[in-house]
Image 1: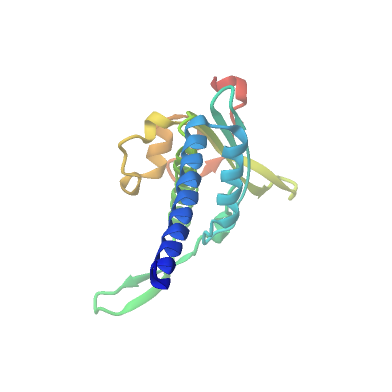
Image 2: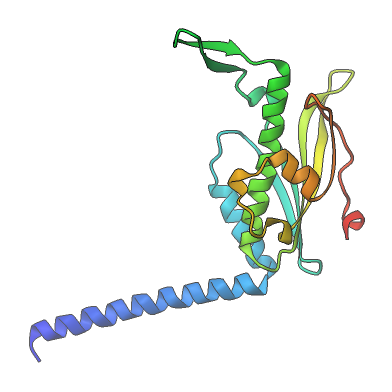
Length: 207
């Protein structure tokens, strides 16, 4: 056998070993996805939440209950002050002008943002394991009470079910309508998009 043949055999053996390691890693990942091991699910979510980059700040706490196949998420939402309050408008002569948004428009965009945020997170979490059948997401924001202290106000609490995400093009749904008409929820939003404080669901209330 020539030195060239030896080199080719060595390179093939090395590639076969790399392929086998990758195959075993994918196989193990799929097995854990199907099994729905709690440690695997929480580790996968830890990694995703650490790596995710979004234009608005948020914080999240979560816990998976394998006995109920349910993921509980508390979501510290962006503030309405984080939404840009100006927009570019094309004038009749073709020029662009920057105008202030109305307060109602700001509230509408904020509501679309925070409900869309919950849909985005839920869709990814369902993808972590088929064992996750329900996700309770309760979103809260910081507001000042009557005496001026900052308090956490929950503004929605939605019980997402896996079946509600099947065969849905999420890019085309209205997040407010999707959350408030497609799933059990608590939300007190006025016609002018004021999100009033609510009491979020407790575990025993939804199962």
